[in-house]
Length: 189
Image (cartoon, helix red, strand yellow):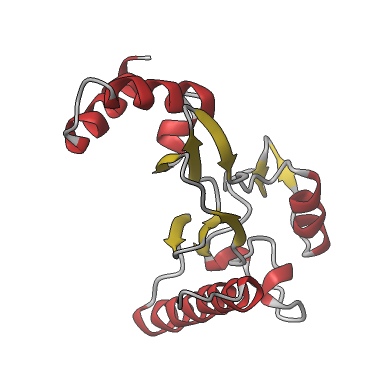
């Protein structure tokens, strides 16, 4: 990504990369005889002017700015109205808040047993590999980003974690130690 990043082009490039990765994973799965399993993805790309937030599934990114949550990605859960509609249109159902009563996310790389509606585009399968991409202008008040899986977000809110990390960074500069404290917080909560 160049310094003069075109937000629309970068967004489309990231999405195309996800589609290509999912296609590559599918070819590997067919070649090696495995179809089960998948992964959620959360990532950021930081340019001189923007922070790009990328998520596919229920891993989440949060930007903390001046001690507060400034932005967070939205989890892709089957019970969300738009996600549910796509799942049902592809021949699936949402039962017990899961795709076909089994999978707890509605977007992921892999999970090919949920991507069998050959007449539908990849973005309209029960489980879509399409990431949500958001671009935010950078600010001098940006403090830190948190990228974590549902194991963290199922135990703490965005605001709780932002406040916790903000308080830890006031007394500890060792980021590994702060990460360790986050894990302890989640395990013992």
